[in-house]
Figure 1 (spheres, rainbow, N blue to C red):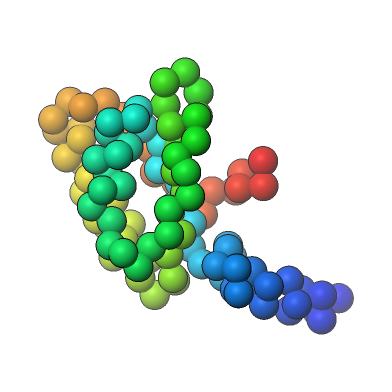
Figure 2 (tube, rainbow, N blue to C red):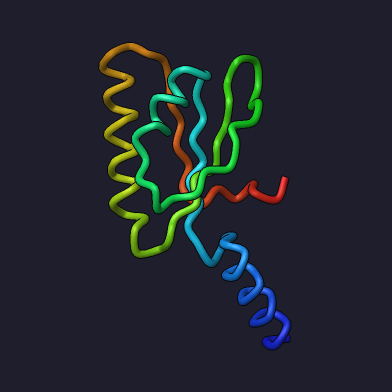
Length: 101
């Protein structure tokens, strides 16, 4: 029912969780992930990092919808810079579908 969906969304907005905010998953090896995350504005919330495979780590960056396009552009620039410097892969996923698992 609509009332249940409205209540769930209100609770998620209050907690600052998707879909009330945008979520960007950033995955890389420890030093590269730390470098990418170090340049983030104070207005974002970072959850993690947590292990994401062999030596990779994953962090979830939560940001208000209105700030998301600028943040995603900045993160993509960091990915390009890491690639150009041959620092290893940095993977971004915006609003990843596997947040529940």
